[in-house]
Amino acid sequence: MKRTALFFALAFASSLALAFTCPKLMKQVDDALPSAKLSAAQMQEVKKLRADGEAQHKAGKHSESEASLNKAKSILGIK
Image 1 (tube, helix red, strand yellow):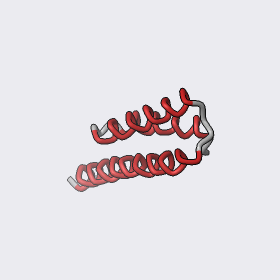
Image 2 (spheres, helix red, strand yellow; image 1 turned 90 degrees about the vertical axis):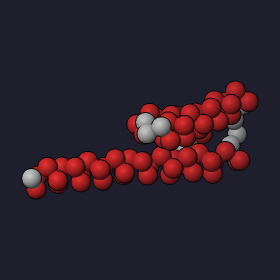
Image 3 (cartoon, rainbow, N blue to C red; image 1 turned 30 degrees about the vertical axis):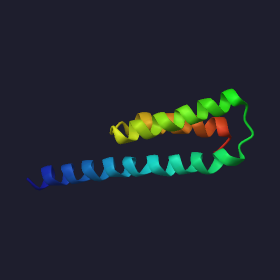
Image 4 (spheres, rainbow, N blue to C red; image 1 turned 45 degrees about the horizontal axis):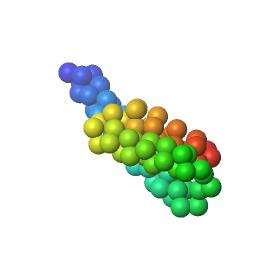
């Protein structure tokens, strides 16, 4: 019984850890947007990826959200 409870506690904690990464990534993208030197097409792509990342985060699809937001960061040149 203790193992089962421990398993569920760890699974819950790890899902929360992933959930908290998305807002951090969104903030990094938001902070870089005003000073970004991008073409209009790149800017549009970054904004789309940012919006997609937020929607995916709200839907609980955190790995997809992180992928979208990391792609936006890559276009912006953020490490």
